[in-house]
Image (spheres, rainbow, N blue to C red):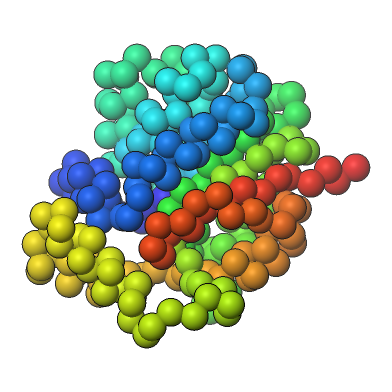
Length: 243
């Protein structure tokens, strides 16, 4: 998910920047695709939260031609680019894009979505919003997703995360390694510095225990880890049956 104010020029360069800057970005999408393919039916309806420029959908769609997608994102410029990319790939007939938060999505007529992806979205939201102006946080996002899923549907979530207390690493190691990762992929030092400053200011990483508590409160099973690349971690959870 991207900020609602995201100008067209930044949107055009977003995918290149993110694919080089985020450790394991391509592999994360590969893991998401095969995990969903192993879990949901051939005619599944999938919710893609924070779909941005459409990369998640573009990476998943080839795995099952019967899947249909609803992507939601608050950034109009990103969605405009997503529409172009999806049309070029011949996927417009399988995809509906919605501008806004997840609450703007209409639930499917029969039982909810069969699965959902929420990749690199939640870390933009605070755990406990401090002001009325910033009243939307991780708990609200997860509750909104839960309301749209059928019982038993999988949710694959990935974010910048804090290591659990049992994983003790030298101070600053993850940030130092991330800096080297970006440098080796041709990102300029000035851009790396800006990215690190942005991450310190705007990213809200979460530890797995807290994520488990938030997922449980929203109606999901405890998360199971399925991916890690430096500070990026991915988990699989399932919508509980409320009946």
